[in-house]
Length: 191
Ligand SMILES: O=c1[nH]c(=O)c2ncn([C@@H]3O[C@H](COP(=O)(O)OP(=O)(O)OP(=O)(O)O)[C@@H](O)[C@H]3O)c2[nH]1
Ligand SMILES: [Mg+2]
Image 1 (tube, rainbow, N blue to C red):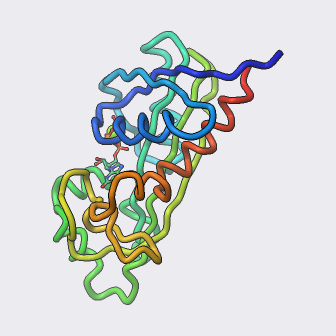
Image 2 (spheres, rainbow, N blue to C red):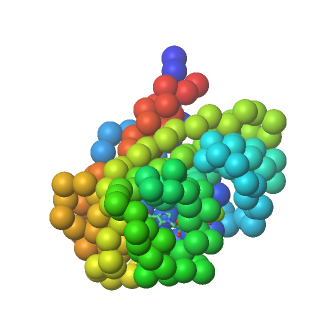
């Protein structure tokens, strides 16, 4: 009989991601327990999918067992999807004001947050990807600056930035939530 996977190692160095992933996966149907490992894994250049696959493949090799990894991209429509997977470095160098300034002079501030989870069944196994996307726009910072670019991303139709939302509101509409729902469904049907 098929049995679901109910615990997993999440390889990440990002405490805010971990907190959200645990909150999302521990609630709802088929709760999944997460153990985390912070491994320093180089991230390649490429599409979000190429970056996600390479990171998860390397994580499984280092751990010697199944694992999940996650990559988050923030994509600006005016910049044809950039900074995308390189948002970490743009944010570190430019800050919230600089991200807004990048779009000065462009008619659209539209953006989307893209989360890519990767699951590897173990060393040598091809990672499987689960993507979640939330559309919105880049706005001057509002709300606590606790997590990355949360204060400058306003999901469409909410009137609030991610940073202004209570965590359970963000965790019901976020890019991360949408990707995790797909991962949860997949894990439920694994032998
Ligand atoms: O405001 C935010 N709301 C979010 O929901 C969110 N998710 C990720 N991020 C940030 O975007 C970059 C992704 O880079 P990233 O995927 O390589 O993550 P990371 O290097 O921090 O961790 P990891 O790769 O060890 O898992 C990093 O700067 C993260 O802090 C977010 N910021
Ligand atoms: Mg990273």
